[in-house]
Amino acid sequence: MARKRYDPPPETALLRNRLREALKTQDDQGRVVSSARHGVYLFYDYDEEPVYVGQTYERLSSRIGRHLTNQRTDAVAMNVLDPFEVAEIEMWPFFELEDAPTNVAKDVLNRAEYTVYRRAIDASSHKAILNEGDIASTELIELPPSLRLRVVPDEVFEERKHPDTRIARRASTIAALARAISEREVGKGLRRTLLTQARRLEHLARARLDEADAVIPDQQSDEEV
Image 1 (cartoon, helix red, strand yellow):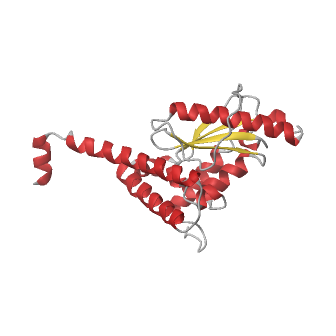
Image 2 (cartoon, rainbow, N blue to C red):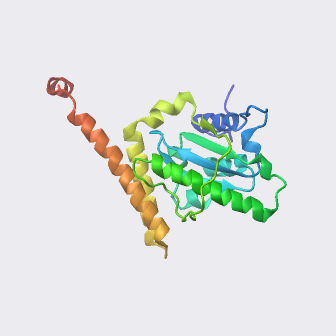
Image 3 (cartoon, rainbow, N blue to C red):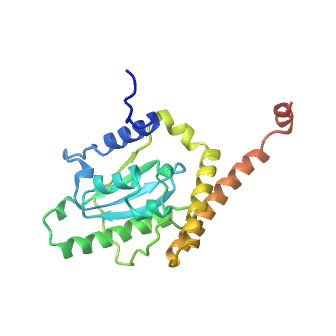
């Protein structure tokens, strides 16, 4: 069947279909996890590094979808978060807050977000994630069971995971973020994000160089012939 004129490119269609299917996943009680109105989410890159944490009062599916399928979030529009870098998502749904007063829900989500943030920092090789805004320090709480899923289909996963592809993409993101900073009066948060992105790029580029240095000399000579 011929592709309709206004259909998205095949890769984009694959990515969006995979995201839609992932967001339909149910918990052990038969509830669609992403349908929770209140929740916290965490994004991971292709090295399983945590990169961005957030909370929502508008359903996890809506918030995550806006991050990963268009530029209707400040984080994406300002080049803080590149959806291309997101390979997995983790969600903590708070179904019990569905009918809770706003102030109660806000307090629980603030504490939950900080708890997830601390876990992300501890798990990060760089001891930093990309969030521009400061996440207020609160007491840590016990979180509900989470659901972690890959959102990139097999058909494009290996190509997107390739370090050279990610180095090029990451360098482009840094350039765009640096340009945005140069054209605006910005706070400390964006500059911190720029530094974190630069460290992430250096880490990936250094690992790639180390791989090149590890090539056996005879093999390297054969490749150059």
